[in-house]
Amino acid sequence: MTTLVTGGTGYIGAHVVRLLVDRGDDVVVVDDVLTGVRGRIGGAPLVEMDLAHSSAPAELESVMRNYDVKQVVHFAGRKQVGESVLRPAWYFQQNVGSLANLLMAMEKADVSRVVFSSSAAVYGTSEGPSLSEGTLQHPVNPYGESKLIGEWLITDAVVSQSLRASSLRYFNVAGSGWPELGDTAALNLVPMVLERLDQGLSPLIFGDDYETEDGTCVRDYIHVLDLAEAHLVALDSLKIGPARNDIYNVGTGIGSSVREMINQIIERSGSGVIPEVRDRRLGDPAVVVADPRAISAAIGWVAKRGLADIVNSAWDSHLLLKR
Image (cartoon, rainbow, N blue to C red):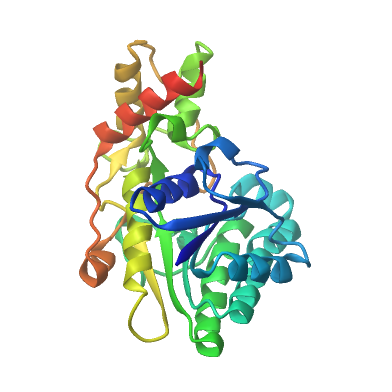
C-alpha cells in the first residue's frame, strides 16, 4: 500500500513524507517543485507534475495505478494571501482546480481515502480564544476562499465517490522536526523574524495596542512535527468507517503573543535587539486560537510540543540551512 503525497517537497509535506517513510510506509510524491525543495524527501520517488493542468487527471491516475496508491495526502497549492488578492482567478485554478483534478484521478483509480490541507483562513475575521469547527466561516481573501471551497468539494465528492476524507484546518505552523526540513520561506512570523535578525535589523511588531495582555496579537502556534503527526493519525482513522469528510482544527488551544514569540527568538539568538513597533496591519484580528477538542475526542490526536520547542527547533534549523 502506497501513500501519495502531493506537494511533498514543501515545508509541511516533507515532514509527513519523513514520518511515513520512517514508519515503513511506501510513499510517492507528486509536486511541481516550484516552491519546494527536492532534497527534502530523501529517496522517496518524485513525479514532477502541475496538478492544475488539464492533463493532470490522466497523469495522476497513471501514478496511482503504477504505485498501487491507496490513500492521498493533498498539500499541493499556493498559500500567499497577498498574491491571491492580486491573482484570484489563478489561485482558484491552482488550489481548487488541482483538487478537482486529484479527485477525478482518485475516482478513476478507485482510491477512496484523502487528507486535505485546509487552513484556519476559512474563518476569515472570526476571532477569539477558542475557535471551533462550527465557528462562522467567512474567508476574506481568495486564498481562504479556495480552502473553504476545497472542503465543500470534498464533502460533495463523499457522496458521489464514497470518499473517506479528513480536512485539517491548520493554525500557525512553525518550528522543524529535523533541522534540514526547516521553513525557508519568509512568509510566516518565525522565518520573517530570523530573516530580519540575519540582516541586522529589528524584528517588526505590527500593532501593540490590541486588547491583549501585552498589546500584541495572540495566535495559536503549532509545531510542524505535531501537525505532521496529526496527518498520520487522520490517515489511519480513515481505514474504516463510513464515507465522510471529517473537518478538524489542528492547533494547541494555547495562545502566545507576537511579542512573546519574538522575544523568545531574540533570546535564543543571543542578539539582544529590540523589536520595532509599527502600525497595525489592516484586518489583523487580536486573538485567533484553536479549539482542538474535536480532533482529540474523535481520533485521539493532541499536540505535544510548546513554544520553546518551536523556537529551539527553528533556530537549530536556521543555523544549518543558512550555511
